[in-house]
Image 1 (cartoon, one colour):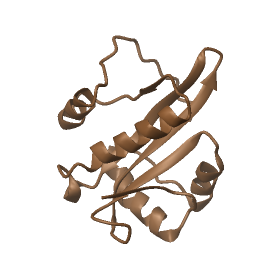
Image 2 (image 1 turned 180 degrees about the vertical axis):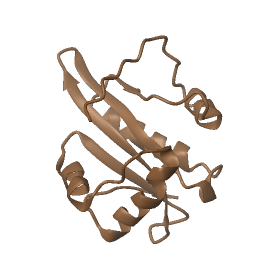
Image 3 (image 1 turned 135 degrees about the vertical axis):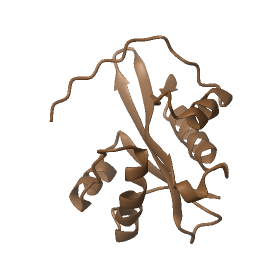
Image 4 (image 1 turned 45 degrees about the horizontal axis):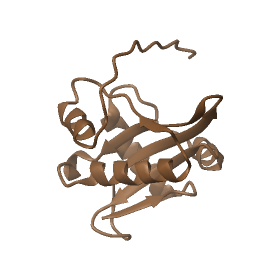
Length: 145
């Protein structure tokens, strides 16, 4: 398996995101070429992709790692992790997560957090098996669009 950090908005990347993002759930917008370019220019965000079995293969999964500083330390969060439905149960999500955790650790982050819909049972089992702990908290969201 080949995991890489994407550094530019190519047609291949855009095409893969158009295929993968709808698998995250309903009403998830696909980014434009300009939005992808802005993502890659951000120092805080990293898009990781997985290819099976090697560097030249089709993109089988992705995740976004965000690392940011707050007054109490360096934090990181994993967002938009998805593996193509045709490639699930092959260790792709775990490989992506492992690489994201390594990058967060290298950046000096105190922790890595993520959110997951309770209905995504396999994903939640994976996160717990990797040492993520369920946190009792209230999640609030204010929609701006």
